[in-house]
Image (tube, rainbow, N blue to C red; front, side, top):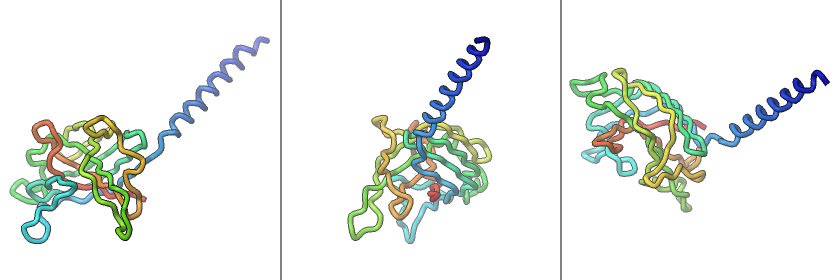
Length: 186
């Protein structure tokens, strides 16, 4: 009977460990992004390069690296490096950008014969985060829309109906222009 307390404690710790591991496994990955594309303010001719109604930055922007994991409960963990101006006299700097936000835009289901659905204009935004002088930031938080909802499970897919992840500046306390877009990883 001397070993009874040891076995009881061991059983309790084992039960807690296995239930904790199960709880972590319940939150699955919705999307992974690896790599990024800097914004160009203009498309062919004078057309502005809008995405989901969001204007690009006023000059070209580049991005060195982006890794973002988005979970089914809206949690996001992202590391972004080198969001810097790709032109103007301030090339290679963060310019006037000091705060950034990550926005996810879902797609509607495609209607045949279309391959991709239309991009929704409602964004699921992260908290604001400081952009350091090298154009880097790390974000661990959640994505929610204006009503507090997290991205739905049917936000898009990993084939042709891909959602869009934008790195945006914060202007007057709200998400502003986009500087870079994430590349969805299969």
